[in-house]
Length: 280
Image 1 (tube, rainbow, N blue to C red):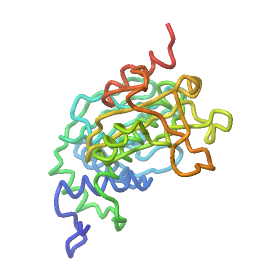
Image 2: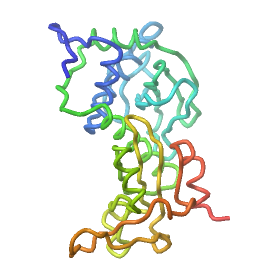
Image 3: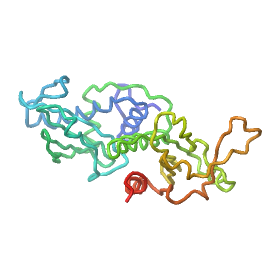
Image 4: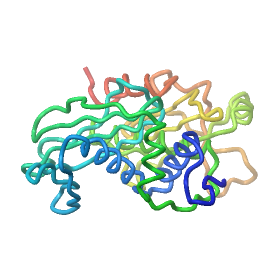
């Protein structure tokens, strides 16, 4: 994956987005540097911007206003999408928060004064973001051999992991499967991915629910999920593989209750709370 030219610049918007996904997948927060550069570049048109990077703030505006920049990577969403905000009890005193959203169709900036809701202040094209990336000497890390499918899957998991923690204070065990043809064949034979089984007695990782996500290329086509408290309602059986001395478990996707099935990330986010965490 040769993304750079002889002058260490990114070739295209598509490659820049792929690189940002790589950084997120590899748990590297350096993509936040792009958000900071974009914010600084925009604000410096009208204000004096000084680098701070201490005491919970990234910049000092006009010598007095402290601003901390957050950069959500949201390449699967477009303008108008909601985003996670810093809760009031986690905000640093006398500090405003800028949110530079890296969306699929554009980069957009919101600014929230201390303890106030974010206000939209600017849109930046990806063409301009690419120029900023290539002219602001952002250090480029050589990518590992990630496939685009892996990058997308990791991005989806990161998003859901953060969302569950913020919305419900819940922790999930995530499992992914990527070969639809194989999964369809297994389903016909009454087999589901054995990693869907999570022993509630041991509860490794101290999780609250299991989330199994099926991908076809870069698209999610099915999600199975259950809270650990309802483990006993899933019909797990010993997997029929040789002697199976380790007692590996499986389940039949066709027999799984619709309570534990979702067709999309959007449906999961809309319904998982009412199904599992907010009983009526």
